[in-house]
Length: 76
Image (cartoon, rainbow, N blue to C red; front, side):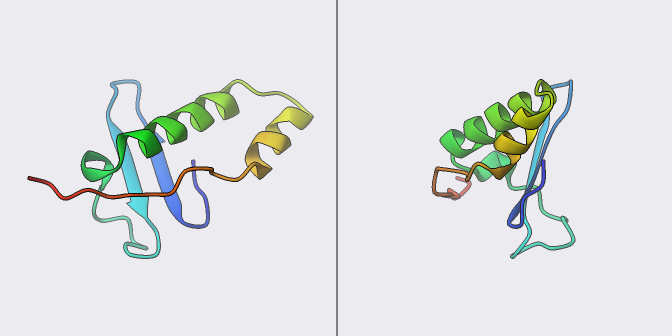
């Protein structure tokens, strides 16, 4: 899934990729490991909704704002 700010990818293996397009426009640094788990869960849910939508409901899902603020945590 791609928004103006983010690229989010889920693979069948369970691996995830998350890129902040403002900070990393070339998508070189995967920030999924340090992202807020609630934000990742929201992106995962939206991805599943888009994968299973049909007709006008797809547009409604695409147009809905991403509700949660993004917090990236430091890797310890």
